[in-house]
Amino acid sequence: MEWQKRLEEALEFIESNLEASLPVETIAKAVYSSPFHFQRMFHMWSGITLGEYVRKRKLTLAAQELAVSSTKVVDVALKYGYDTPESFCKAFRKLHGVSPSAARKPGVSIKAFPRVSFEPHTPGDAEVEYHIVEKEAFTVVGRSAELVCGAEGRTRPWFWGESRKDGTFDKLSSLSAETPLLGLTMSFEEEFTYMIAREANAASVVLAQGWSVQTIPAATWAIFPLAGPLPGVMQSGLRNIYKVWFPATEFEHAGLPELEVYLPGDAQAEDYRCEAWIPIVKKTNI
Image (cartoon, rainbow, N blue to C red; front, side):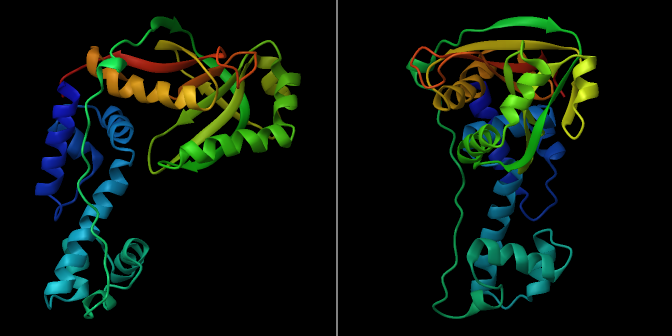
């Protein structure tokens, strides 16, 4: 329950400071977490990125103020952290579907984005199998794309499908056939880099002209064996890691790329096996 309490405290902090600048470092520090780990936990528990949540809550209050007051649009924009009326109008229209000026007109509908709630895990989620390994630095080669957080349940399978059709899998096999296919998630902002890759040796890297090349530093990894058809088993596995395993342990995310390790086999079979690799460090109070 510790992490649920921390997240609830973070929500209280956010709600009390919506008229202030709210960088992730400030929010994470208020609940004694590293920024990177907090962002990932918030997203996995709520289904929305921290940045998007703060923005939508600010725009909800801004719309309410415009609807019931005569405060100038430029002053409301500044109050909720927008440097220019133009940037405020763009963000406002994206959420509410109307301009800030139009929101003042009688009968015009605006949206209210509510506070999120954090549900604790159920007893059926109580056990998560894992083991820990130390791994030296290694290099991967592959194809990468920028995907949108919150939509990854759709965009990741789409990217895998496109990579299968365009020959990426065959090309990766020709570079490094003896290693499993990997999915790498790098950075956890509202957009993130996702890479389909294989671990490669120096010779493979030389041959990988035009490909994305990423060096993963030496790290401690928590490895979670998963069994079931894709993509569901990986999606549910990652949710359990963040909602069950992290709150139950003394570890937090190390801020390096996460790995999805796809072993040979029928990916739609009930007994298909894959692994989630999460880089970890011991918790430190901030």
